[in-house]
Length: 256
Image (cartoon, rainbow, N blue to C red):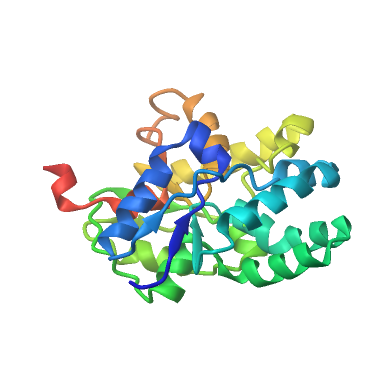
């Protein structure tokens, strides 16, 4: 690979789910990508933008542009954060009244990729040499599905994993109920939506539920965890949440 590629780990992953960005680097390096980690990176600003603090998000837009502007590609294991960069930054740059920032955002945003997009569209691979001998179901997260329109890219990657037993999730495209601050401000609705999601997850008898955003996996995993070791007669063990990157990073050597 000759392109310069940077990992955008995202603050949520860096703080709570560090195994996901580590798996992303492991996977990309296995595919021949020389991955850099710019240490100036921080939050994308989505938490401010989504809660009405647009002005407070603008410095984070500037930092993102300054940090990643020199790279040919920026890869993140988060449809939510990539969606923020590609869908919200233009509005924020316009709000700042800075033509230079607007030009920088317009030029940079198309180079920011969610992991499955980068693998399938840029590297043009679906079989990444992964091995994961488990029963798995996949939850498509709202931002990746509706903002980025990743379509079936994650499923194409999962179907190519050796040893996997991939089962369809009923009503897969329904929201899990997280939605960032939505889960805090509308907790009863959020829990009701999440409960429906985990009921569907458990109906598959999957060992793992996979998604491309750890924010959604936190919601699903939290609700699953409250069910204890089993979720009811005949439903078997509670599924464990795992990020797509961690499934794709697995190899036969890892299970020896």
